Length: 609
Image (cartoon, rainbow, N blue to C red; front, side, top):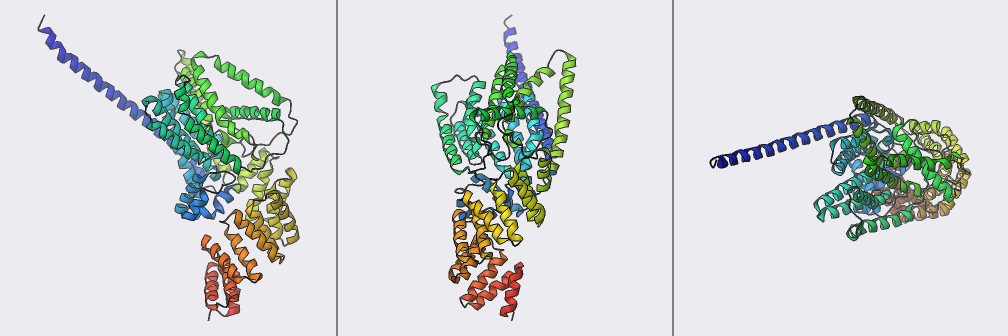
């Protein structure tokens, strides 16, 4: 019996080594499978969004953010300072400026460069969603389900296909990364991941102010992981809450969007929020008739709105009755509701349940659906497993097809706004945006009709009045243009473009003193507005201040080196100063850049000789 004991030890060691080897092999196979599944999801995501890369600009937010935004055309100390001190479209989003500047660096203003970046950011977010869900749940199926739903859901097209929703993509990326870092902190009990989470959260709020809800999402993660509420748990959230508070104060200071004038009561606002939640829930499974914007109901609200809170409460109660998924349901619904809450804080002009509001929040609903689907495919009844797999395959095909189709609606301003007008004909800004596109194409008749329809729906829509003033200017009705622009600057006293256009109109009316004052106000509110410096150079020349005009025109050319008319006008000012050589050089440059006025000046002053 004694010889048997030594012989057993090598066998036990061999068995242990074999078990370890099998475990390592299984882990390697699982890792390979995860990578293959993730690669397939990313590939499908790219396939369904790729047709959006060739789309053009949309004349709602894109002009201010990208097309006419001179500051993004060069990385310079002045421009970087501008990005971090100046709101972009009433939001403090300096990292959006940075991302646009990178796109311009490589794409030189081509729409495709911006669209490509949006698609790439979405693909990165798909990867982060997969990793986050895998780490949160610990199983492959929910991670693949949530990532696939996020990747191809048609509602997300409005975030990916619209260049001006870059803020949403960036904020989601940094928020997901912050959540991943926080989960690593919970697993390792180390401080560095918590610091990284806080830094990533800071980047998220520098991308979009709605990211301020992340601390509440961290509390939901604590709940899901079973962390009891404690002093330590609260203390580690203080830095996050401080960043949120600062971001909220900044957002309130710069947010000046038009608020719908229906005069809603507090009860109405609550019912609208419930209605928004209900609409988002419906569109999660039935994403048909999607629109860029949704019309606000007029007060008093129809009686059906009073039933929506009851329906939502009943639905939540039914989900909570399933004990096995109760924790997932609480977490998922909480994540969704926390995510959509900022959209209900301010009623924006493009609707109280715009599709882009749920880009990140939908993850909570997708997670709930994933857990129920996982239970179905593991059910003991074969027919239920087959039905669940068939339903998922049908939804993938259905959503992927709708996403490809939805991207075609975003081809340009005319297509997306006409699509929205056909589905929601009572939304003022869609007519305004289509009017801007027509105005820029020189179709002034169609543009005027759209702007007039805009102000008929919403008399306080100042941007429509602004463009009506511009169309009247182009039609030679300077007095009518001045009336429109007087209204604009009286209602929007910090709107630089309004002062710029009024200054241009006053130059046409030969009111150079008034023009100079307006253009000075314009550059005060937007120091990057090259046209305002050019026009002030025109007014200054006519007022007998050619030296000041040259200074303004130098600034205009510095901001926009290809500004032909600015070179021409600087030549005019220099000729008034008696510097004929400099004037001829500027007129020659202006002519080479295509200024008709400069060609006339060259001929008149015999500079070619």
